[in-house]
Length: 263
Image 1 (cartoon, one colour):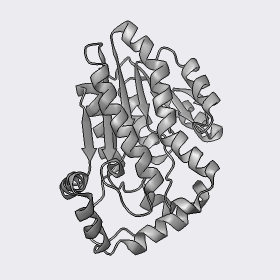
Image 2 (tube, rainbow, N blue to C red):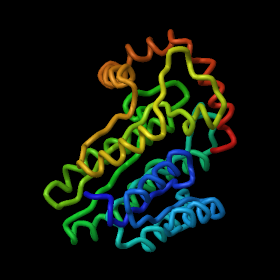
Image 3 (cartoon, rainbow, N blue to C red):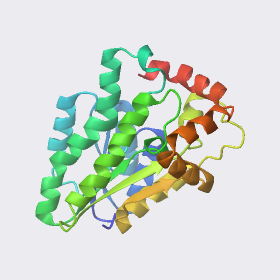
Image 4 (spheres, helix red, strand yellow):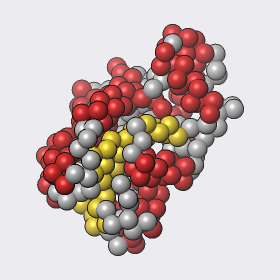
Protein backbone atom coordinates (compact mmCIF):
# COMPACT_ATOMS: atom_id res chain seq x y z
CA UNK A 1 0.00 0.00 0.00
CA UNK A 2 1.07 3.55 -0.70
CA UNK A 3 0.21 6.16 1.91
CA UNK A 4 -0.06 8.96 -0.66
CA UNK A 5 -3.57 9.23 -2.01
CA UNK A 6 -4.98 6.56 0.32
CA UNK A 7 -7.82 7.26 2.75
CA UNK A 8 -6.38 6.56 6.21
CA UNK A 9 -8.47 6.25 9.39
CA UNK A 10 -6.32 6.85 12.47
CA UNK A 11 -7.75 6.19 15.92
CA UNK A 12 -6.24 7.65 19.07
CA UNK A 13 -5.16 10.64 17.00
CA UNK A 14 -4.75 13.19 19.78
CA UNK A 15 -2.34 11.17 21.94
CA UNK A 16 1.39 11.66 21.69
CA UNK A 17 2.05 8.86 19.23
CA UNK A 18 -1.25 9.59 17.48
CA UNK A 19 -0.27 13.18 16.77
CA UNK A 20 3.12 12.11 15.47
CA UNK A 21 1.43 9.58 13.20
CA UNK A 22 -1.13 12.11 12.00
CA UNK A 23 1.50 14.65 11.03
CA UNK A 24 3.61 12.12 9.13
CA UNK A 25 0.60 10.65 7.33
CA UNK A 26 -0.52 14.14 6.30
CA UNK A 27 3.01 14.98 5.12
CA UNK A 28 2.99 11.85 2.96
CA UNK A 29 -0.24 12.87 1.23
CA UNK A 30 -2.81 10.68 2.94
CA UNK A 31 -6.50 11.56 2.83
CA UNK A 32 -6.62 11.59 6.58
CA UNK A 33 -9.55 10.86 8.90
CA UNK A 34 -8.71 11.42 12.56
CA UNK A 35 -10.64 9.90 15.42
CA UNK A 36 -10.48 10.52 19.15
CA UNK A 37 -12.79 11.22 22.06
CA UNK A 38 -11.73 14.82 22.83
CA UNK A 39 -13.51 16.97 20.22
CA UNK A 40 -11.65 20.22 20.90
CA UNK A 41 -8.18 18.70 20.55
CA UNK A 42 -9.31 16.56 17.63
CA UNK A 43 -10.79 19.47 15.67
CA UNK A 44 -7.69 21.57 16.29
CA UNK A 45 -5.37 18.86 14.97
CA UNK A 46 -7.62 18.14 11.99
CA UNK A 47 -7.74 21.84 11.14
CA UNK A 48 -3.97 22.09 11.31
CA UNK A 49 -3.47 19.11 8.99
CA UNK A 50 -6.40 19.60 6.62
CA UNK A 51 -7.89 16.32 7.83
CA UNK A 52 -11.41 15.19 8.63
CA UNK A 53 -12.32 14.68 12.30
CA UNK A 54 -14.76 12.09 13.65
CA UNK A 55 -15.23 12.14 17.42
CA UNK A 56 -15.78 8.70 18.93
CA UNK A 57 -15.35 7.12 22.35
CA UNK A 58 -14.22 3.59 21.53
CA UNK A 59 -15.41 2.37 24.93
CA UNK A 60 -18.94 2.72 23.54
CA UNK A 61 -19.76 -0.08 21.05
CA UNK A 62 -22.39 2.10 19.37
CA UNK A 63 -19.83 4.83 18.71
CA UNK A 64 -17.41 2.25 17.29
CA UNK A 65 -20.10 1.19 14.84
CA UNK A 66 -20.90 4.82 13.99
CA UNK A 67 -17.22 5.53 13.34
CA UNK A 68 -17.02 2.65 10.88
CA UNK A 69 -20.22 3.82 9.16
CA UNK A 70 -18.77 7.32 8.83
CA UNK A 71 -15.62 6.00 7.11
CA UNK A 72 -16.78 3.38 4.57
CA UNK A 73 -14.09 4.18 2.00
CA UNK A 74 -11.15 3.61 4.33
CA UNK A 75 -8.12 2.15 2.53
CA UNK A 76 -5.90 1.92 5.61
CA UNK A 77 -6.97 1.54 9.23
CA UNK A 78 -4.35 2.40 11.83
CA UNK A 79 -5.82 1.24 15.13
CA UNK A 80 -3.74 3.24 17.57
CA UNK A 81 -6.18 4.11 20.39
CA UNK A 82 -5.53 2.46 23.76
CA UNK A 83 -6.05 2.79 27.49
CA UNK A 84 -3.06 2.18 29.81
CA UNK A 85 -4.91 -0.33 32.06
CA UNK A 86 -2.13 -0.81 34.60
CA UNK A 87 -2.64 -2.04 38.13
CA UNK A 88 -3.82 -5.09 40.05
CA UNK A 89 -6.92 -6.78 38.68
CA UNK A 90 -8.72 -6.61 42.04
CA UNK A 91 -8.38 -2.81 42.06
CA UNK A 92 -10.59 -2.60 38.97
CA UNK A 93 -14.36 -2.47 38.97
CA UNK A 94 -16.20 -4.68 36.46
CA UNK A 95 -17.05 -1.52 34.51
CA UNK A 96 -13.39 -0.50 34.33
CA UNK A 97 -12.42 -3.97 33.15
CA UNK A 98 -15.02 -3.81 30.40
CA UNK A 99 -13.76 -0.38 29.33
CA UNK A 100 -10.13 -1.52 29.20
CA UNK A 101 -10.86 -4.62 27.15
CA UNK A 102 -13.33 -2.81 24.90
CA UNK A 103 -10.99 0.02 23.93
CA UNK A 104 -7.83 -2.07 23.67
CA UNK A 105 -9.20 -5.17 21.96
CA UNK A 106 -12.86 -5.19 21.02
CA UNK A 107 -12.86 -1.80 19.27
CA UNK A 108 -10.02 -2.57 16.81
CA UNK A 109 -11.54 -5.99 16.11
CA UNK A 110 -14.97 -4.51 15.38
CA UNK A 111 -13.58 -1.67 13.27
CA UNK A 112 -11.61 -4.21 11.26
CA UNK A 113 -14.69 -6.40 10.83
CA UNK A 114 -16.69 -3.43 9.56
CA UNK A 115 -14.07 -2.03 7.16
CA UNK A 116 -12.47 -5.15 5.65
CA UNK A 117 -15.39 -6.16 3.35
CA UNK A 118 -15.10 -2.96 1.31
CA UNK A 119 -11.32 -3.37 1.16
CA UNK A 120 -11.59 -6.91 -0.17
CA UNK A 121 -14.16 -5.78 -2.74
CA UNK A 122 -11.65 -3.24 -4.05
CA UNK A 123 -8.78 -5.72 -3.79
CA UNK A 124 -6.60 -3.36 -1.75
CA UNK A 125 -6.28 -2.20 1.82
CA UNK A 126 -4.32 -2.53 5.03
CA UNK A 127 -4.99 -2.95 8.74
CA UNK A 128 -2.22 -1.75 11.08
CA UNK A 129 -2.78 -2.70 14.71
CA UNK A 130 -0.63 -0.74 17.15
CA UNK A 131 0.01 -3.11 20.02
CA UNK A 132 2.85 -3.25 22.53
CA UNK A 133 5.80 -5.35 23.55
CA UNK A 134 3.45 -6.14 26.46
CA UNK A 135 1.67 -8.30 23.91
CA UNK A 136 4.72 -10.57 23.86
CA UNK A 137 6.03 -10.42 27.41
CA UNK A 138 3.90 -9.99 30.53
CA UNK A 139 4.97 -7.80 33.43
CA UNK A 140 3.66 -7.22 36.93
CA UNK A 141 0.44 -5.19 37.23
CA UNK A 142 -0.28 -5.40 33.52
CA UNK A 143 -2.76 -8.30 33.46
CA UNK A 144 -5.55 -6.39 31.71
CA UNK A 145 -3.24 -4.52 29.36
CA UNK A 146 -1.31 -7.65 28.42
CA UNK A 147 -4.53 -9.63 28.00
CA UNK A 148 -5.70 -7.14 25.40
CA UNK A 149 -2.34 -6.78 23.66
CA UNK A 150 -1.68 -10.53 23.57
CA UNK A 151 -5.17 -10.86 22.09
CA UNK A 152 -4.59 -8.08 19.56
CA UNK A 153 -1.40 -9.76 18.38
CA UNK A 154 -3.11 -13.12 17.98
CA UNK A 155 -6.03 -11.53 16.17
CA UNK A 156 -3.79 -9.68 13.73
CA UNK A 157 -1.47 -12.57 12.94
CA UNK A 158 -4.37 -14.95 12.33
CA UNK A 159 -6.43 -12.46 10.32
CA UNK A 160 -3.42 -11.82 8.11
CA UNK A 161 -3.53 -15.47 7.08
CA UNK A 162 -7.29 -15.33 6.54
CA UNK A 163 -6.90 -12.38 4.16
CA UNK A 164 -3.93 -13.72 2.18
CA UNK A 165 -4.60 -13.33 -1.54
CA UNK A 166 -7.32 -10.69 -1.14
CA UNK A 167 -5.03 -7.68 -1.55
CA UNK A 168 -5.64 -6.67 2.07
CA UNK A 169 -2.68 -6.82 4.43
CA UNK A 170 -2.53 -6.91 8.22
CA UNK A 171 0.37 -5.78 10.40
CA UNK A 172 0.99 -5.71 14.14
CA UNK A 173 3.30 -2.93 15.33
CA UNK A 174 4.60 -3.36 18.88
CA UNK A 175 6.51 -0.51 20.54
CA UNK A 176 8.51 -0.81 23.70
CA UNK A 177 8.76 2.11 26.14
CA UNK A 178 8.36 5.40 24.23
CA UNK A 179 10.07 8.63 25.24
CA UNK A 180 8.25 11.98 25.16
CA UNK A 181 4.89 10.34 24.40
CA UNK A 182 4.73 7.06 26.29
CA UNK A 183 3.83 6.09 29.84
CA UNK A 184 6.96 7.62 31.40
CA UNK A 185 6.29 10.99 29.76
CA UNK A 186 2.61 10.92 30.75
CA UNK A 187 3.07 9.69 34.32
CA UNK A 188 6.39 11.27 35.24
CA UNK A 189 7.65 7.91 36.46
CA UNK A 190 11.38 7.27 36.37
CA UNK A 191 12.44 4.47 34.00
CA UNK A 192 14.47 1.64 35.57
CA UNK A 193 18.20 2.06 35.26
CA UNK A 194 19.52 0.86 31.92
CA UNK A 195 16.14 0.78 30.16
CA UNK A 196 16.43 2.32 26.72
CA UNK A 197 13.40 3.88 25.07
CA UNK A 198 12.36 4.57 21.49
CA UNK A 199 11.14 7.88 20.12
CA UNK A 200 7.66 8.60 18.74
CA UNK A 201 9.35 9.06 15.36
CA UNK A 202 10.66 5.50 15.48
CA UNK A 203 7.17 4.20 16.20
CA UNK A 204 5.79 6.24 13.30
CA UNK A 205 8.47 4.87 11.00
CA UNK A 206 7.60 1.34 12.11
CA UNK A 207 3.92 1.85 11.30
CA UNK A 208 4.64 3.39 7.90
CA UNK A 209 7.09 0.61 7.05
CA UNK A 210 4.59 -2.06 8.10
CA UNK A 211 1.86 -0.61 5.88
CA UNK A 212 3.96 0.10 2.80
CA UNK A 213 5.83 -3.22 2.89
CA UNK A 214 2.94 -5.34 4.19
CA UNK A 215 5.03 -6.61 7.08
CA UNK A 216 3.59 -9.19 9.44
CA UNK A 217 5.04 -7.87 12.70
CA UNK A 218 7.24 -4.90 13.53
CA UNK A 219 8.75 -4.66 17.01
CA UNK A 220 9.88 -1.09 17.67
CA UNK A 221 12.28 -1.51 20.57
CA UNK A 222 15.99 -1.60 21.40
CA UNK A 223 17.64 -4.86 20.39
CA UNK A 224 18.00 -6.06 23.98
CA UNK A 225 14.25 -5.70 24.57
CA UNK A 226 13.46 -7.52 21.34
CA UNK A 227 15.64 -10.41 22.50
CA UNK A 228 14.23 -10.41 26.03
CA UNK A 229 10.62 -10.32 24.82
CA UNK A 230 11.29 -13.23 22.47
CA UNK A 231 12.80 -15.22 25.34
CA UNK A 232 9.89 -14.28 27.60
CA UNK A 233 7.44 -15.60 25.03
CA UNK A 234 9.09 -19.01 25.16
CA UNK A 235 10.15 -19.08 28.82
CA UNK A 236 7.73 -16.96 30.86
CA UNK A 237 8.82 -18.46 34.17
CA UNK A 238 12.42 -17.48 33.54
CA UNK A 239 11.33 -13.98 32.45
CA UNK A 240 9.34 -13.60 35.67
CA UNK A 241 12.42 -14.33 37.77
CA UNK A 242 14.53 -11.89 35.75
CA UNK A 243 11.95 -9.14 36.23
CA UNK A 244 11.81 -9.70 39.98
CA UNK A 245 15.52 -9.09 40.18
CA UNK A 246 15.55 -6.06 37.90
CA UNK A 247 14.67 -3.42 40.49
CA UNK A 248 11.68 -2.23 38.46
CA UNK A 249 9.17 -2.48 41.32
CA UNK A 250 9.40 1.21 42.23
CA UNK A 251 8.85 2.30 38.64
CA UNK A 252 5.87 -0.01 38.22
CA UNK A 253 4.23 1.36 41.37
CA UNK A 254 4.77 4.94 40.16
CA UNK A 255 3.13 4.17 36.82
CA UNK A 256 0.15 2.42 38.43
CA UNK A 257 -0.47 5.31 40.83
CA UNK A 258 -0.25 7.92 38.08
CA UNK A 259 -2.57 6.04 35.71
CA UNK A 260 -5.24 5.21 38.28
CA UNK A 261 -7.47 8.08 37.19
CA UNK A 262 -7.32 7.09 33.51
CA UNK A 263 -9.19 3.79 33.86
